[in-house]
Image (cartoon, rainbow, N blue to C red; front, side, top):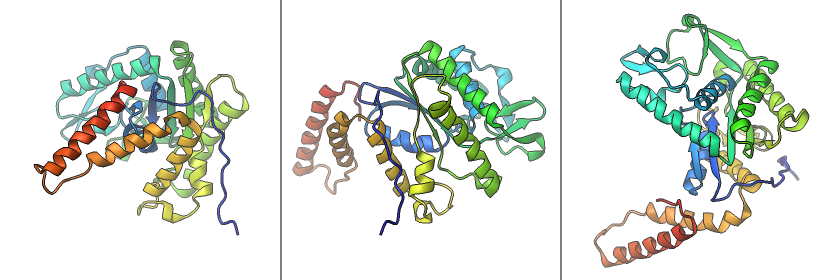
Length: 318
């Protein structure tokens, strides 16, 4: 008896290997996949401006980086003893205004470098709902727990999302024509918007990404990865969610990572991934007697393994 559907996966061209540079931006699911890439020591930059849920927020930062439009004093504000920026996640907020602006601009430089040189860019979109700050009349990436009356909530249309994502991809293609885009919808459920509202929101995103990657393909090198579909169709069970019943748990993340690995990571990296995983496990070892001869021999062998691997992968650091 078959108790689970399986989404068929096809091995993609232009796969990720240890020479690749991968930029990941978007919802918190980016950090799940990004953490796996980091663990296996692939070159990557993930969410330099923190978690971004909706397409307009990603588009705005991409254009800012490509145009080298640095953050300035008028782009930040003070609230609850911290300086913030409406364009980025609260993880970057700072009690010092100058420190915040400096960090924002350093991250902008890093983003621009990756946009110009990345081999692969992963965009994970989480929601079609956006919040417009009434006073400035601009859509924000984060509301910073400012009272709701200061914002107007709006559902982006399929047309608006399509225009935003297409503009994002086109702008990047002009400076990096060989880049491969991987578009995906986050499997995280935004139930605070409402059950029906979450479904409508995800549907808008799925519709746009499907059209861009499989329908009216106006750009080459743009593919869809079914992270949302795997969660909804293969893993149709609450045992694959964390206790909040919103976020995928570690088992679900691992299953989706394995699908991503099968589809987008070069098979030639598999033996190197195993070696790196072995070293990562050894590095987490905590000895009872650090000064013992046995542990010193263990460290010597571990350093030799790292040194041998670094000759194969020049950028490797533990």
